[in-house]
Image (tube, rainbow, N blue to C red):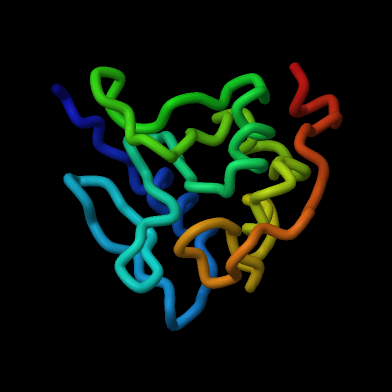
Length: 138
């Protein structure tokens, strides 16, 4: 199994999604990064892919969005985590309802991902799950 290495831009993008909160710790994991709260991972980086752990309703919502999918090695994806669509990197209105992290094109935000182990507990409704802007739909 080959583990992809993230670029510095991938790491910077990942860190921009993670809330600046004393309870949150970003640590290296097998050459990639993981974001943890009290020892529980809620987001990870695997090469250029960002994976998140959401509550059941938000996971179902994310799973039907084009570009989302399993997170981690193809041979053995991480259970309970989904990859965010890569197209969302350039999309200002990218998050699904269960993800309350900052938009990647905005400044760092105190909003947090919902779900087990997250600093905010259950997910808040948040923005719409799809981006309808021309730059993001093509």
